[in-house]
Image (cartoon, rainbow, N blue to C red; front, side, top):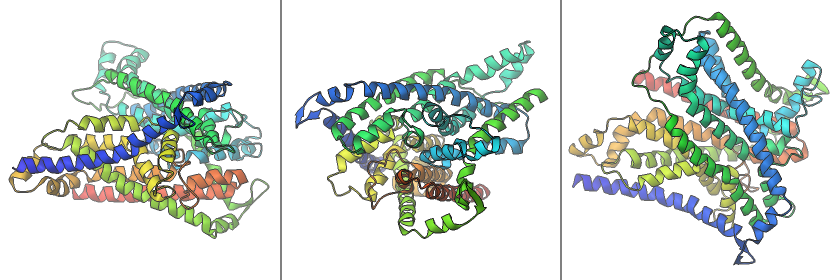
Length: 543
């Protein structure tokens, strides 16, 4: 009887989660396909013929593929070097912590800001150009996109590689040395080989993120047309065409399908160790010095482009009059429309974090903490895999086409729902992993003592999962603050957020306002991370 009640509660939660995904994934996907194959209210391939004719889509697709692939290779090489420095050298602990912190710093700012920061750093009157006395490269177009994509994808690649390196058993390094292997062969055998799968994943993930990004091409793409800007211009240009936009969105899904298949294949290259040894690395001053200098240089170059974001708004007129001034800040703080946009971002991010944490927790519970595993749990795993590879722009277009004539159009609801789908995968896998590690007998013991499943979750499972829930809340909030590609199509005049406002301000060359709004985002995210750190310390002390 107890088991039957528990299963009923689990199934109720599961079906509620399933209904949400049907409404906000299945329905928008159907609408997107319908619009792509619809011409004058009839099934037709006319939209495909119109898009493919002239070769513009093929050129944009090839440009996107080229710049994304090159940037993903560069990113992975640089991230590997920095991660190796953090995990396999004997440099001071404070330097390792500094590298770890600064390496993920760009994640706290929206990608659309990267482009403007590059302009103000490497332009003819840019901060870095003035410091060195010459312009390093033409930042509009191909080279600017590569640089921007490397900055954007570096934190993700670094995190992937660092996390895997921390689980490499260092005893294999000792064994290689005992057997007389050279330093290079030891590196190949004991470090590089176990990381091959993660290196490939890093390349795939970096490629996918660059291919589908809209923020960086929107600011420094120039005449180098990529598929994301082509999609935006088709949907929201001077002559918008939703049907052709749906066709381009479907072509943008091709890397998603490729990513799903390739990531699934790469799983077989994962190496598992029965035990993890953290033996100290052999002293090698030359190795440590070279890697430390190289890693510091990489991180410094990435961070340096954001220096102008912190400087230019606080001078009278950059770069002509560099006297300190708070006039720009006062102007933005006194602008009610910009304050309203900041308020919208806070509300949307907070709602995304609250409802997203609840959705992720509920979905993971159905997969891992039910006494009778539901057959539908495979559906949730499939949903996580799908949402992880749907480009934000495609999701935004699907939401626009599906809900533009409904009551949630031009409301905060549609933006929050879009964010929940867009950011579901990573938190879900985090939560699922945390629940897997918990004692599987808790629910049974609680049921014997008279507690139902819901009470067990609230009293036992949730408190033990609190650190992970907090991490998920922080992840969703920060992503809600910096996202632009998924919501650029569905944010209206009343629901505009900071990132879409930045995209609008670029047309008026209001870079001071852009940088100050970016600082708003940065400070908000830093405050949240600080609060999370304090709470984690209290949880650790209590435990």
